[in-house]
Length: 475
Image 1 (cartoon, rainbow, N blue to C red):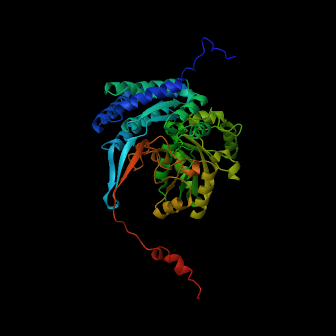
Image 2: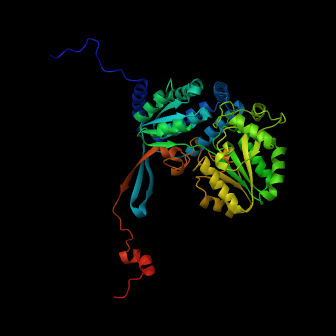
Image 3: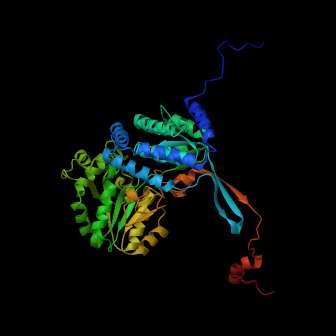
């Protein structure tokens, strides 16, 4: 006997994520064929509103209060710098129609939007992450749905509301940019499975969860910037750059300097330069207490993340001056067992001396393999070939030369790196790219190929190197 369905039987209602995606697809469809000038007005509106001084102050102060991470004034400066930098990167850029052409090969490339992009953002620098990705998404005529770290959901929601209001002012649909109201690991997974592209920055588990959902994904890997200071370095300039990058926003950036590899002959002078700028170099006993305080169970303690150096010193019972801006301690062998050799997300540094640049390269390889594979390293030197040696030997995606990794990796007015908040690490860091994820990664491309005559070498010419090296035996 067949039973009639119960009176209240019906399909499950759509989830909150499904409703967001439906609204995003509708909004994206409205702008999918907008001309470049109309899109650029919307981009300018978002950038203008996010960079209003009072708005930037309010959003970053709210984020720092909500998470306890970083320094509000630094977070505000970072937001303003990144909005300015991304707008500069986007200025005059064409993101639709004919993108580029190679007449000699008969090829033309046309840019098209991807659709709906899911963006998983971290608890550190959360407002900057929303700003950068929203600007890139709007410029490329995509919709973006943000899934913030649960610990900063209120500030993230406030930032998205600023973006939505700016879109409305510019005559664009507000639903181009939306946010998951109650983010958790289940929502991350559902969002990642429903969108067309995932961009993920955050903790290792969050990034892996987003990147394993079966959708194309760009993800940022953990950092552990190893900085080499050789015997030719300008020690004062090196110390200035390192302290600026390490202390900014209390060291919360994954790009902040982490482990310092210093040529033994200049190590005392370099240490003095660092101390003159507010670094406290721990003795052996203090170094042990620092490790126990920052990594009490072998994992980085939340109580240390993004906290001022003076507070970490008190936590570790280190009698450092109140003016201390960073703490440094000597790395211990075996390095693989020393937690100080990994990512720190705080104004804490590891320090080790080397003799001979080959050893510096070997230490850099070893330290980046422990933590931050594929991410970055830096070198302070007067010898350009030293940077080349590191670039050829170390499995990182970026080598910063005579500048701060904390500022330079993610784009800076003083270098040519694209502005980003997603520092991808290539296959070394289990990622799909090792570029700074920026507007070009928000596009699909259609290739048009016309018939052309192309150079076509014979098989004899193409295989000549092998046949010359391995001549056939005489018959």
